[in-house]
Image (cartoon, rainbow, N blue to C red; front, side, top):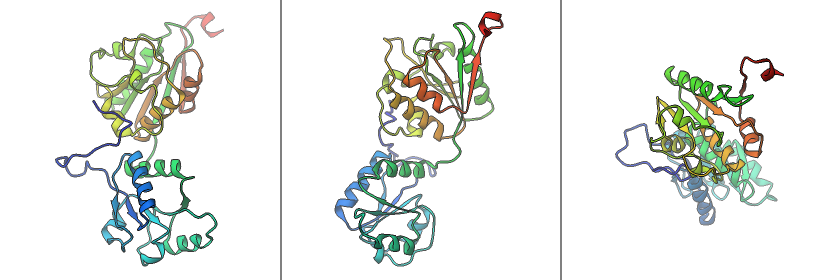
Length: 283
């Protein structure tokens, strides 16, 4: 079973086009190279390394992201201008780094270790092909039995049948379980207890591969064991991964408000409150 928090591995027999593009690293600083390799691994990718030599034109132009160590910036000539070039420095007091960045055409100058979290996200976004995020819809019932879970499933199924990439997230541990509602409680895949303690970035592709697949959508629900609290960081990581790949994400929300639910609410584009057609339900 795939662990979505681990770097994704691509086998040699994968069809052309399925292997993720590799960022390019240019540096002769072994310590900096070790740091950049570690950050690339955290982002789920294995980079191409040029060891400070003038970059191959093809690699320079096609890499989704180019990481240039400040140690070799003056020596790589004048490559073709492109987006996605980052100049990596260590000395905040070196004013010359900005001149070298201009000469290189770098988008950003970043300094390690302070910018490590930002750089991991930037690498992962470049490799995954960050585009328009998924439309994220939350559904919550105003009272028990209002039909919120049914509506959440209906929205997700409709989106999937329209050919949209769809992820359905059961964020209510006290509900009946959306996998049961969809008839997939025995379908293999990760459930919330497997992800409840996740920290850091979760790869969107790895997450989707690891979840149960039902009716052309990916489902994150609960198992039949004891309820496990979901850390807000885990909710942030999982919903962030689900949204980055685009399409539609539907979240079935609990009626109580805790830190994890607040985190889920922060990711929504649309929130739907479901009420029975009774006067007291609307009061």
